Length: 318
Image 1 (tube, rainbow, N blue to C red):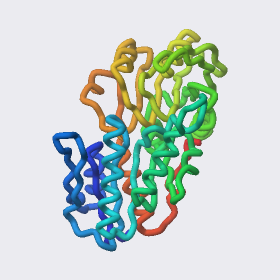
Image 2: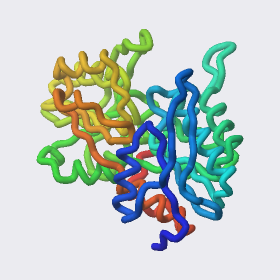
Image 3: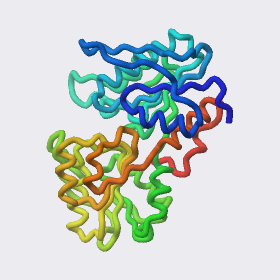
Image 4: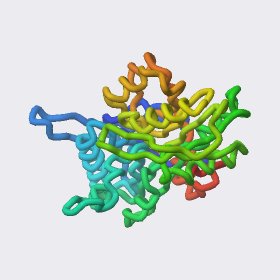
């Protein structure tokens, strides 16, 4: 596939991911200055000439979320004013995705606001990965290519010894479709757990449905922050006789509370991707990080060459 007039830039949120994409493309990372003034304002200057080019800006809006979002918006505006032919905002992790509806009086729909800001800044297209809710795609008034990490996770799981004794579980009713796609692919039983959220960091698993005793359990979800849902699920699964409990999660934005829970070893393994920058502390815990650079590279190439992105997926995850 052609890479003529293709340029890749990155903000400061995850430069290692952008570098891995450029390495696969055998091209240099775009040259841009991204820095902060003493008063914390962001300054961006694109050094390379990009007039008439197809520009992709890699920037997950993970913590610090507000800084990452503003940096992305300013980079898009800089590219637009430099006469880029097309600008694609690549968000491996789309922050604020959980604020996608009015579930209380007088609260914002921040995911929609972020979508509006990206369009207003000058983005012509969005490329993202495993949105918390697929309907967020409809928040954009520009094309949105929604990738799934399932091919990466599938390739890892396929070679594991426990695959023939697997039961796939959803940690809640809302994730059943995602879990069902994995269960269908591996031709294994499916289950789900009913949970009750007590606070932002505390979750209680109340009951479960599915084949558990003596089985190797795989919990699949889109993201984890405090590991509360995963830990609560693992506790009830092991109390019902599960042989092992693993979790496959696309996005990990782990807090100190999450590390405390992982140290309790209710989860035998936490499988995540590098959609957000991996932390050095991961080495101290049973965490496996799967690279998504190849998946994003393939998607970028297909978008650049006006080819279908859908054919990338053996299993969609939804």
